[in-house]
Image 1 (tube, rainbow, N blue to C red):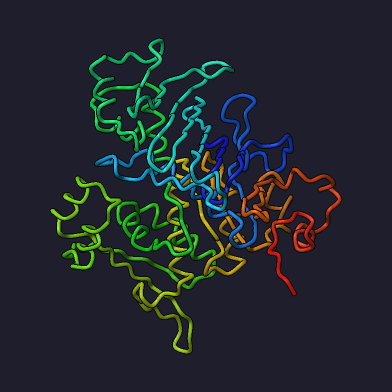
Image 2 (tube, rainbow, N blue to C red; image 1 turned 180 degrees about the vertical axis):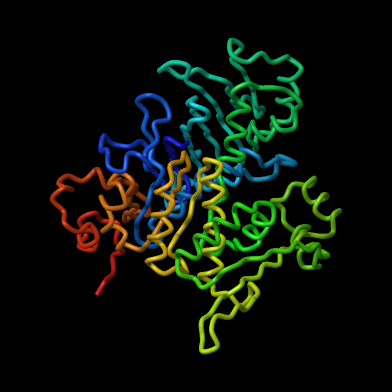
Length: 429
């Protein structure tokens, strides 16, 4: 589970901001929205972020998505960018490094990861774990004379000099230690646990334009429980869908797709070769059975994906991802969750997620402020966050619980609309 994400000089966040999933002493919805991962550490299952357009909400989600990509992206040469984008609305920050820190728990063990890099190279990368209240270093990676120097804590991890040399050789200055580690045949206790958590525990971010239908169809084909879950959710959400069928078919790769792969400089050479060698890709054909009641009685009709509404397709995809999130105790980010969805459905999706006792977590952004009126009825106060863009372009992140007098507020939505919490667009009359 994620405990804390700290970033500085990344996209619209010039100054350091901290997103914390640590719960306050409030015991509201303690049984299903709070997880005590170790004695004394209580983590939230949900963080919900509000803010005006271009205030930094999406960029916060992108920070965690960046780390997930960076850990596993293998670089072919030193000319490739690290893809770290600093705060650009300033004369100094574009030439300064970006900073990331992530604290998380895997199987009851706390880890602390730090990363300092610019667009061309990694300056410092470290991973710690906690055997006591003080962190113990597992590895450090620093840049000296343009070369990565990797050191392990010999008291925790026994690594041969040959493995260290191979890791150093493969760890180009513009890629993560973890991407190099994946190319070397060795065993690294604790480090490998963190890698496996990041690989399978952090799910890809869902954006408003993310096409989830193929993903959901492919997952459902191999998991009958997912089909039951989706049918149950769709039925309760008042769709008239009574069955879903999916078939897989292999089709030749279109020419435009081959050209896109060839021209994409971000795809590593070995990945390109594999994709182009296969020359085919799997496509999933999903159809929905609709049950209707008319003058003739009850009738069933099967309609293809192309005739489903955008809201139906997005619900289908989001719920497939949430199912995987809950099942695997994973972490899922959803940007603008209300996109193409009815407000009541948004509330229902969040409510159903929070009802489950699980170690799964969601980080969600939204403009749908009526959800604020569910604080203390559905949402905890410490689950609500805000982003606000300052005059100099810097994004600020802060929590609802930083405000005083919250127990006296009768309508959090009205207070938000009236500017009590900031994070509103500055519309000029």
